[in-house]
Length: 90
Image 1 (spheres, rainbow, N blue to C red):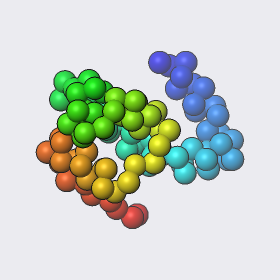
Image 2: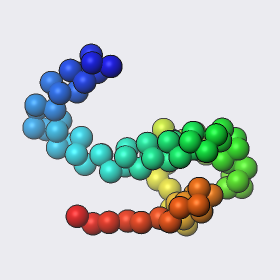
Image 3: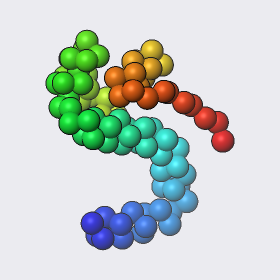
Image 4: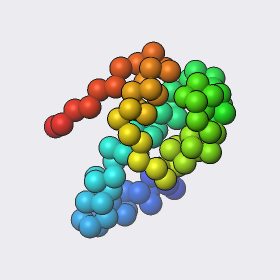
């Protein structure tokens, strides 16, 4: 893991890379939270898909950042985990 951190730190010294990284950070934080909640709740992608009435492949694409979920989908997702969707502007 330290090799990853070293590489990340070295790359983030480049202002252009750091700018892009910061632009993508909210998206990846959201994806990491979704994956963490799924795992914490002992759900497979298929289990989660069943609860959301969708396909496992859709959950896979979501977790890989290949699709942009709608607010409706995110609200349904939050509901599955007993959470409330909150969006903040800082």
